[in-house]
Amino acid sequence: MSSSQTIAFLIYPGFQLLDLAGPVSVFAGANRALGRDAYALRILSGKVGPVTSSAGLAVEADGDYSCALPEGHTLLAIGGEVPEIDLALEDVQLTARVKSSLSQASRVGSVCTGAFILAAADILAGHRVTTHWWDSQKLANRHPDIAVDTDAIYIQSGKIWTSAGVTAGIDLALALVELDHGRDIALTIARHLVVPRMRSGGQSQFSTELDLQMRPGTRLGKLCEAIRRAPSLAWSVDTMSETAGISRRTLSRLCREELNISPAALVERLRIDTARRALVETDQSVTLIANEAGFGSCQRLDRAFARQLGVSPVRFRERFRSPYSGVAP
Image (cartoon, rainbow, N blue to C red; front, side, top):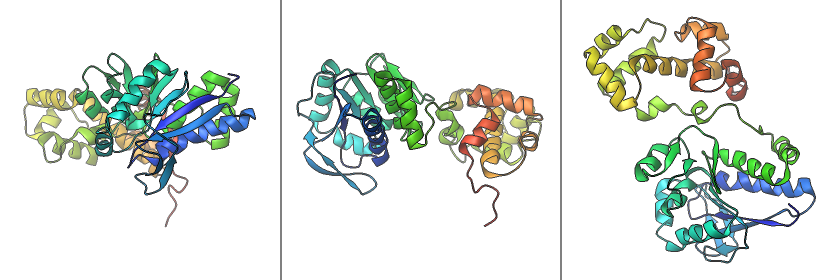
């Protein structure tokens, strides 16, 4: 693109600072890499002036929600905690800005829970979108006409772009830069920021889905705790039923109603959680981890990781392991 393109970010009191700083750094990096102002960056809020983030640091908004933006701009709604977003949405100018940009902009998107802002503006119906895994079910419950993908890092649906939580905004911004200026520029920026251009797998690598859905103290919750304590046991349906003190039929029903999975899939998910914790927190070999987590072999562990996380155990360890794992304090 030969001319400067405006990227406008929507913020509000309590916005997530990294949701803004990550994408801003990518677009500013593109300007440096290209040696010109390919992107003009605007920060919009309810009023011009300092806006305090959830981290306590303030960012200066240079325009309000109603300010004019050039044709073909890109608008990105920045995420934050949902209560802060709900409070910000009391300003009708916020959703009005999103709606007007849908017709004027080349792209309208969100970082993390910024998807709640787009949804409140009624522009996501029929689209497949993503948001932070922690709040994805809440978004789906509020807006059943939206297809919420709980695992994607970012999604393009027409001119709508949405990204997962926090640092996934960097992935989305890199994708936009690549679309505008090519892969080499995007790779240059990624190398400078010391981030991968493309991640292996999706949000499921970061979330512990069952921990979010499980209600502590329930029969199913107590069963999961028993499996976590001894994942290498042969957890047949009969053993699970006996441990939970319920019938096979009730066990299957609870798994289906509360988790939308089978008892066998529940065991596999819990074993995967055990394995991935060991991969990032210990120096144990993959073979030992596979055995202690209940998979019995590296091959079965590999297949389970590929199926659920989209990445191998070795790659998972390389990507997420702390450099201090296994080091005595």
